[in-house]
Amino acid sequence: MPYQPPTHSVERSLRATTGAKIVAGVDEVGRGAWAGPVTVCAAVTGLRRPPEGLTDSKLLTLKRRAALAEVLEGWVTAYALGHCSPREIDELGMTAALRLAATRALEALPVRPDAVILDGKHDYLGDPWRVRTVIKGDQSCVAVAAASVIAKVRRDAMMAELGAVHADFGFGDNAGYPSPVHRAALEELGPTPHHRLSWAYLDALPKWQHLKRPRITPDNMALEAGGQLGFDF
Image (cartoon, rainbow, N blue to C red; front, side, top):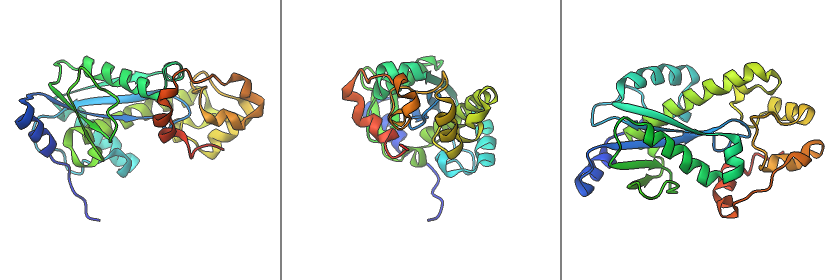
């Protein structure tokens, strides 16, 4: 399938129908990881032509993604990151953690957006934000694609720093997601302070099951399952 560059069509629609002047694109990374924070980026781009090759971060090579992120950080009108720690994820559940991380990112922008384009079909943000959800927005919307790339590169860098301290887990390569190296280290060494302890992977680790924390908010389980089921041992 030929490359289709993202456009400003959703942003133009929001501007026309709601009167919004400042529109932020929002995307997250780290939802399906076993370790590390969930990270959300909010990016404001205006209606300028985007850098060549901009698309969903998952479709880019590591080298291209890093180079594009460096360009984007100087190209966007503004951007900000919000994080939710593994402990907060365990205590709040993923839906509320995403909301908190996104709120932190949006409130860190120099100007409050009038509307938000949120990647995916679930509005985990809600009031008081005016939200438009877009499935595959990280491929079709300029601001969301920019947020996707910046969030991915910044979180990967954070995980690489943790990997220098916890070398057996390979965080520099797997960014806290399941991998053979990560699984082997968990079985042998157990979770680090950076692991999410309410998640199902611990069910397959008899030696470490006593560390598992109960989920406090069962209403969040549907979104959590979308992020983690299928990654169990």
